[in-house]
Length: 503
Image (cartoon, rainbow, N blue to C red; front, top):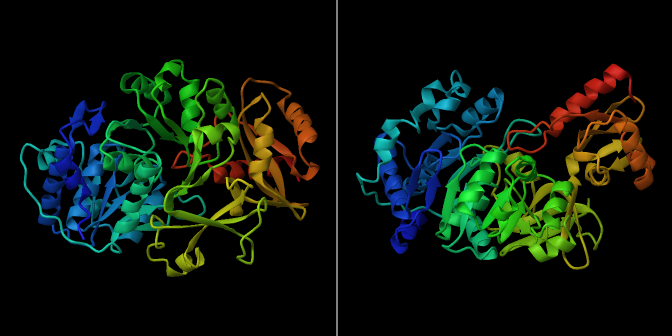
């Protein structure tokens, strides 16, 4: 079957801006994108790349990521975007595990690859040489190969929050079904414009935002690296129809001096995903008529559920209900479906779900129950069918034999006006096994913040759930996908507990 959809898009579209890159001062039409990809497909074939070979790219947000994706689809190669925020050991594990044949890279990040991928480094995507290869003024037509829907199309590695990154496999069917589901759910069309600020090596920015927008024929504005103030400037200039971002990015926009609510007047959807919502940010946007709604997905299943603006106003903590062509089930420990209101592990089923992990058949087998992928997220559903994520199963704190959900503690803590951001994590306790702690970013400096927050928590939550230790931070450490780095925070807490003899 032919999965070369960028060529079809180019055939049916009138010339218009598909990609705008303010950093480089360039614009590319759909016709340009197709020609660039055909030129690059010819080049890859000249380099000996064959169907099934893995080709990688190590780059910030740039049209080159799309060049390589579309060229890979044409040639039947496997597309691998590599997370340039990973640590050296993690990057090396991705390169070895994937057996990537060659890597396109941005010069700024070359130092992260030197010494671990020297023989695979191929070409700088910001160089004149690369521009000459893909230049649409010199077209080398390429006839796309026929592939099976079950063939491997892409590898995208997890962020490594619980160990070394794992390669999530996407077939052509799963890779294409996700943007179709999203475009139909959000009713996207060619009049839509969005700004991509989340990194395009991540499913939230790439699979859930970039690809659906392009499949629908809209216009994508690239922000090379996220910056709240710079994004506010892009909002002023381009007036997007919708945004999808990580909650911390909305916080950075709000905190910037040039934040302007008028920039949001064209927005039909304001969506957050990738990590837990920030209640204070949601409240600020909702209070001025722009509710941020929650979407839910994961690398293994890019988009599963999303709330609606109307429902989001009434249930800001819900991730809504499944999008088109997706099923869910919440399982108890015996893999029986839980009752309404009960907590269990969320399983998801759909054509956009990964078939498994690259080179890890045992881990793949453990991750499925029948056709359902087991997400590792604890969830509940209410009487109206709306789903609420409760916590990650692996992040449950067991203190003195009692289970504590960090998200429950974070919700109560975040309701205090002194708390701008917070993360709750367990630390090692010789007395209780684990104890509860909280890292907080404050809205204002207060030397008595621990006593103030402790009194607040004692009014609203059971005693065993109250943090026994607080740590004040100026900002939360973030992992490679801009989520709060709970492993790093847990490390801080264990060090502080040991130095202070905390139980």
